[in-house]
Amino acid sequence: MGTIRLTAAQAMVKWLSVQMTPEGERFIDGIWAIFGHGNVAGLGQALHEIGSEFPTWRGQNEQTMAHAAVAYAKGKGRSRAMAVTSSIGPGSTNLVTAAGVAHVNRLPLLIIAGDVFANRRPDPVLQQIEDFEDGTVSANDCLRPVSRYFDQITRPEHLLTALPRALAVMTDPANCGPATLAFCQDVQAEAFDWPEAFFASRVWHIRRPSPCAQELAQVVDMIRAAKAPVIVAGGGVIYSGAQEALAEFATRHGIAVVETQAGKSALSQSHPMNFGASGVDGSAAANAASMAADLVIGLGTRLQDFTTGSRTLFANPDARLVSINVTGYDALKHGAVPLVADAKVALGALTQALHDVRFDAADTVARGQWLEAVAAHCQDRSAQRGPQDLPSDAEVIGAVQRASTDTAVVMCAAGTMPGALKLLWQPGQGGYHMEYGFSCMGYEVAGAMGLKLAQPTREVICFVGDGSYMMANSELATAVMRRIPFTVILTDNAGYGCINRLQTLGCGGTAFNNMYVDCNVVDQPQIDYVAHAASMGAHAVKATGVADLEAQVAAARTRTLPTVIVIETTAKDFPGTGIDTRAGEAGHFWDVAVPAQGPSPNRADAYARYLAGQARQRLLN
Image (cartoon, rainbow, N blue to C red; front, side, top):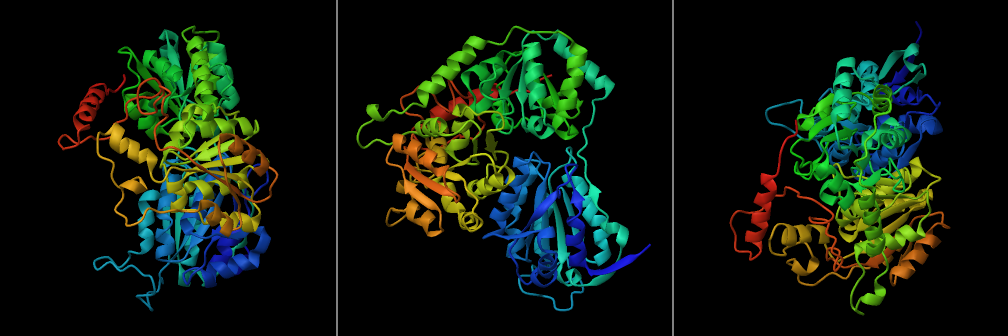
C-alpha cells in the first residue's frame, strides 16, 4: 500500500475535501476561519494550499461564523454542513454558544479548534488555560458538553480514526450534532506518511431506520383505538424529507397537524390539515385540538416545554402519547410509547397498516376562524393609532407577509418575534427557519447569511429585535463583502421587550433592567441603527410606517447585498386585540418560576396563576 507524506493539517483538509454527498457535493462545503497563533501556521497554510477544492471564508467572530454554519446545515436539511476553525483560548471559547445551538437543535457542525502544544515544551503558551490539578486541560474542554463527538489530536495518526468518527456523528440522524477536533498546534505542522487509501473519495449516506415490528404494531393499535388523534409535527419531519408523506397521511386519515417551531412549514399554512402552532405560543385551533385529543402523535419532535405548554396542553384525561422519532432518547420522553424510526419511513409503514382508517374529529371550522383572526390581527392599524403610537409586532409581520414572495423564508431566533411568527406567519412549504431550541440571541444576522448560502434562490427575511442586533451584527460586513443578499427587519422597541413582559405581566414582577428606561444609566441611548448598518456597507433605511415597510421589503429584493430595514415598534404585547401570546385564546401555560414572596403588587396574582398551571402538569400514558 502506497503512502503520501503530508503535515497533519494538510492531511485533514485533503480528507475533508473528498467526503461527498450522494449528489456529488462535498458534505463539508468549506470552512469559516479566523486565524491566530494556534491555527495560522499549520491549518491556515494547508487551507491556502488546497484553495477552492476546500474553500475558506473569513468572518468577524467565531461564534457568529459558527451560527452561519449552523443555519446553513439547517437550511440544507442536515444534508450538508460547514466547518469552523479557531485559535486556542478565546477563539475556542467563543464557539461554545454556537456549539450549544447545534447540539440542542441536532444539527451538524465541524469545529476544528486550535489547541496547546502536545509536546508541552513551551508551556504555558499565550492564551493557555492551566488547571492546577490536571495537566491535560485546555480551553477546548469547554466544548465537551456541547459536542456530540470530541477528540483531542495529539498525534498526526489520530486523524485516521478521529475524522471518520466525526463525520459519522454528523451524518447520523439519531446522533447528529457538533463534532469538535481539538487540534494541537504543533501536531498540525508535523509530517506523517499517510496511507493513500485514506484519501479515497467517500460518499456519506444518511440512513433511514425502519420501525421494529413490535413497536409498529402497538402504535397501529393505539391509532385504531383513538377517537380524536392529533399529530405534533417537529423538525424531524423536515430533516427526513417527510413533508409530502405527512400531508398525504394527515389528509388520508383526517388527523389535524399542529406545529412546533422546528416543524413549522413542513406543511404550508394553506394545507387544510395544518391547524397552526402548538403550545405556549400556539393558535386557538391547534391548542383546542391538542387539549381534546385522546391520542397525541409526536412526529420528529423532542416535545420541548413550549410545545407541550410545560406538560399541561394535552389535557384530555384519556390522552396517550406516541412519539415517532429517529432518536430513542427523544422517543421515550414524557412517558411516550416509542416508535423509533425515520419519520418518512414510519409514515409509510403506518399508512400501509392503517389502510383506510379515517377520523372526523378535526375541527376545520375552528381552523378557519383562527386564520380569519390572524388576518385581522396583522392588518395595518395606522388609522386607529394615535400620532405618537407605534405599530405592533403583529402589524410588522402582516406588512412583511403581504410584501414577500410565496417562496420567501423567514427566520429568527430570540425575543418577541419567535412566538409572534410561530403564531401569525403563514408560510409556504419550507418557508420558515427558527432557531428556538437554544433561542440564541445573536443568531439572526449570521444565521440569515448562512441560510441564504444554503438556499440562494429563495428570498431570505430575517426578523431581529434591537436587543439581539446589538448582541451580534458584525457578519453584516461579511455578507456585504461576499455579496450575500438578504433582508433584515430590525424592530426597535428600545430594550428587551419580550423579557420585560415576562417579568411584569407573566411573573408579576417590577419592570427592571430590560427596557432602557428601566436601566441604571445616566443617559438614555439614542442608537442610529440605520447609520450603524450602513457603516458596514449594507443598504439601510428606516421605515416611516407600515405601508413604507411593505415598499421597502419589495425594494430589497432587487439588491445584491444585505438590506436592513429599521422600524420602531411598541413594546406592549399585541395591544387591544384580545390575542395574547402568553395565555388565553392563543397560547398556553409556560412554567417560569414566580417568587413565592415579594413586595410587587402583581406578584400574588401571578403566583396564583403559576400554582394553578403547575397543578395541571402531567405525564401521559
